[in-house]
Image (cartoon, rainbow, N blue to C red; front, side, top):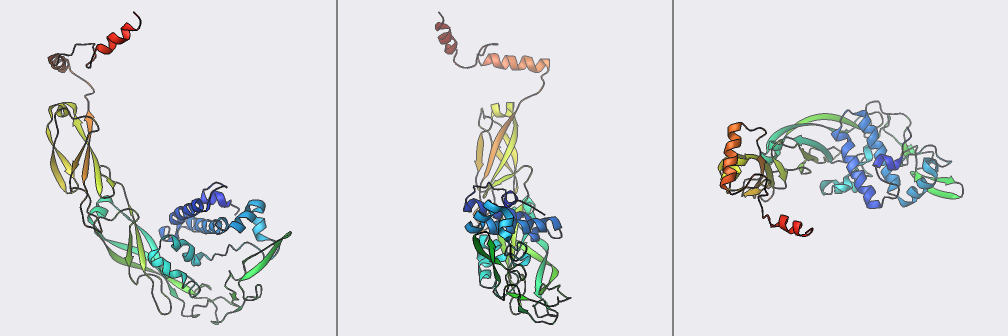
Length: 368
């Protein structure tokens, strides 16, 4: 399937390196297999995203692609474009955005066909993130194939790739230009197998589904990463970690900004005028808000320490209450008369402005 690298990353053709990197991170997170388990379309999209990023993030490859398109990257030698990526060997580039435990996988890239650390997404309800909870998480992890000793070969042996001679790279010519790319025959490993292992289909690993219970601490927010030790992919002699990235659904009434929480409270105009005391909801129950006489629409009030407890410092944020003045849609004859009487008591005449009337006299003087 033909696709444009710039379109797949949703960037312009003059985008700089940082823009491309940010776009790649956004798209890779969106279509990562751990977030879309069993979704073949997302899996294919993820492959395309990584193929596009490897080209556009490399100035030489990008220049060739801009001039000659994919045909320039294919060249006349070595068959189709390999992209230098194996779908299960994407951890080095993908994990570089996250730091932490993923950073250690650079040193193990040549040793294993997959990253030992795993990252999966977990969606929480608003209240679950605020107060913490226990969640059951189902995910897949990799284990070395014992049948082939992780080689992917039925007889457990590999030999040098005949196309690249074991180097993992091939020289490609396009007209007067020459460049080097990963060998498409061995995906840059420099080794090939005669017959695939029937147990793992030449992957060198098998996948297992597991369910575990995770304690979510109070105060987590969108983007929070929780590390679960020794629950990642396995190698012959070690096990990686599981990283759970939190996503939080919005609440209908409360809106979170860091540790502070906002809520809009409807107040009838007479309550605002009179300055009543009204009961309002908080995250942990209810409290009384003392309205000053003449409270204005959109006016805000801060209730200290009624927000979210910070997951690290344990300090409580604030609840910010914003007033929404509600006006009547219809009035009875009796209500009209009462309001007119009230208006008159304030010295306001029907048909005249409630503010300083001298502005009308000033404008009239312009034409006299």
